[in-house]
Length: 69
Image (tube, rainbow, N blue to C red; front, top):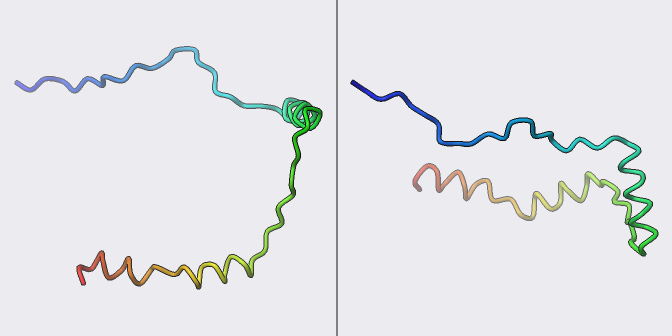
């Protein structure tokens, strides 16, 4: 007779996942800036992504590897 599968993972009962609200984030940013930290805004540029994808295109190499060529 087969034994039942018993998971050996231990689960924490009652643990709360980290889910900050807007006020918590704003307070953390303010404290970070007061301590001399800086925040740089990053702008998304679709053209730069397309250019980097074309330069670093390895999809054909991956396809060849997976197909055993």
